[in-house]
Length: 117
Image 1 (cartoon, rainbow, N blue to C red):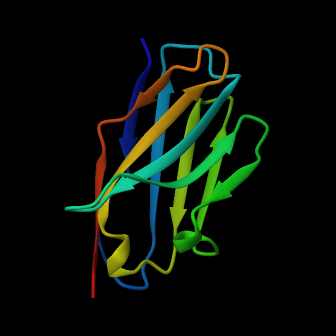
Image 2: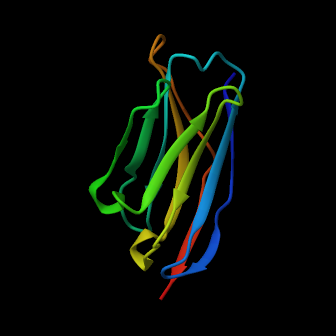
């Protein structure tokens, strides 16, 4: 059973930075897409950034140039470095793993990111 443990959320002022981490366990992650989604109050969950096992990354337009996703395949961990944070980035951030062999998706429990103006 896949387990995803997130850490790194918190409260930060606009313009500040945070780094989220998500440690995965319980499966073979060699053929996976890992990433981050977020959900703000009253809004639908939306993709933030995803990264394939080979390192190719894609970003949502609102975060491109400010956020950087990376992964450590030896540790089965995905990171999200968030710089130049804006109040609009306030949301619960969820770690996500898609197994490209089984097509099974797994989600973390979510971590709150709050950006004050």
